[in-house]
Length: 365
Image (cartoon, rainbow, N blue to C red; front, top):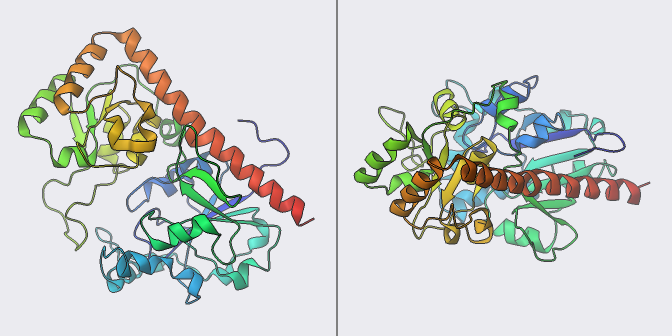
């Protein structure tokens, strides 16, 4: 995608109580930022394509900056104390997010055209002083009350909200809502990010977390016919935290990243469980061909054709056997999924972000 005019200066910010995304020094490069994630890979394209900066900011008491509390008070994921503890120590690491958290007031926002906030990190009393900056945000959890409220009107002091979706034909949205995935990825982004050559000799199956949780031993054995099996399920000794029993490992752990970037298939057939599809997007961007249940992904089930749709693990194995023995069909299906990710999870949302920014600049001239 061509960035006409000048490329906007972008910064991504999160609060010191956010238990997802990155935790790294202010001078970290794109690879270091993504590798530092506490869980998911997030909007990689902002770093690889727009050279975005990243900062952790101290959580302020302003009412609009309290969205993070809904994960405890409304969703009951854990206690407020648990999320607050990430300031002092991150499970599995010997430091907390306070190591690099800074006061929002200390950042020179004038140097940025676009600020992307995880939840709402920057209060109106700051944002209103920078009318030429586009203030954009995700509500990290779509089940949170603030997410639904944001679809009706933007949070105080913010301009646009990213809705997480990447639908083929989204409905007409309010002007402040941008169809923008949590995983802003494009095919090959991880290989470029970590300077790894893409191999034509891919082997094995990377299994979606929820699929692996319920998979019977006989199917795990059957999948070994395709090569090594990997998933984000925790195995062996590890530090247990209250919310972590079913928490996924990080795909950016060096061993899992290597497997993800070299697996031939990604299996996501979780029965009746509905998933959003971020793991699917990540796997396709990493070079895997996804096999899965369209109904489980609801609005995002269009990634699968008759050659890749499978509603059970048994059916998925049959499809993988056919594709494994037919390199031409495998390449066709792989190209189809990669084209969808390129357009829906990078080109279209990035264009819409740039339109929102240029509109804001034009209005405020």
